[in-house]
Image (tube, rainbow, N blue to C red):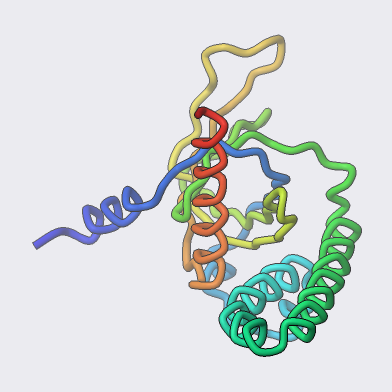
Length: 197
């Protein structure tokens, strides 16, 4: 029988890992915040990142219904698609304004549905817990996850300032966030394959 650690490692390896450019905000958190039951509270629901990811999930869930409408009432389906685009534009504007993402540069990351790695100018200790807010491009979908730092290595090659490579495993990831990450990663992988061809 597999140990819990072996099982978790196997689970992590099941997910594709890609090189990506995202807007990333992070902060250290207390262990109590990892499994905080307020994830479904009104405060969380009003967060611009949660609004963005919730709308994306609703869009995916409504696709099958929209296709059925399209077969019988194509004009109504076109109108609903237009409304969806309007709502998405409003959500993207709220996300960019409230997160101040327009003033942020993208950060190169190695991203999977189980974790990510990124470079930092400051070292972060292993086992430190983080809240990570990510904006995925080009969809401009905001995702909030919590994670634990599994390593912090000083980069061998850097200019005048030292640089550190930080590896993070996601913790208590909701199915909603996992679905968004998996879909984003698959799209990026397909795009990168097309570009190589």
